[in-house]
Image (tube, rainbow, N blue to C red; front, top):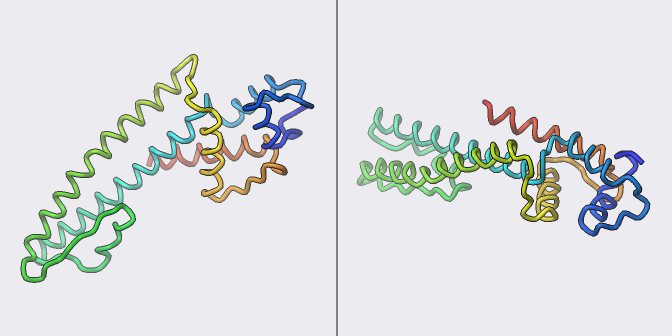
Amino acid sequence: MELHDITVRVFMRCLFNKDYTGVDNWEELYTKYIDLSGLGEEGQLSTHVAIHNLNVRLFRITAFLELHSKVFDLIGMPHLEHMDDMSEYGIKLHLNHEEPEMFLPQLIRIEQREKRNYVELKELEKELEEMKQAENPKTVSARNSFVIMLNVLGKEGYKIDKDKTDMLELSLMIKQHSDDIAALNQN
């Protein structure tokens, strides 16, 4: 049996329920899955995604703060367009037309609050490096990690049907997505 002969659902049954019915070479298939997907262990993909998301957040917020700060320095008033672009990150700016100088302290507070995300990013990068170097990787919850990985891939546009998608396809999807995340993180 090869990876293209086993569906995601069958793979999950073997991995989590230890039910190897119809799968006589489970260890070999699991090893091929790990090798092809590029996952040294479960957890790397979700850590890559978290690092990517933090990098995007920090890049966007930094650019936003720099733009608004420079515009305020140039014209003495906040740039009114796109002020609510950061609402997806829970950032809401308030403008009092009678006291425009109160705008800059808001930008400074936002910048101060974002420092925790830089710390979190460094911790995640360290954690990922430790995962890559670990000889005997720890798995907190293999089932949760696997399901989260499927959900992440689904949100990124990969079509996964547990009864139709084979494990060769899934392994290559994971590898491609990981490579895309790593390339974005390098930029």
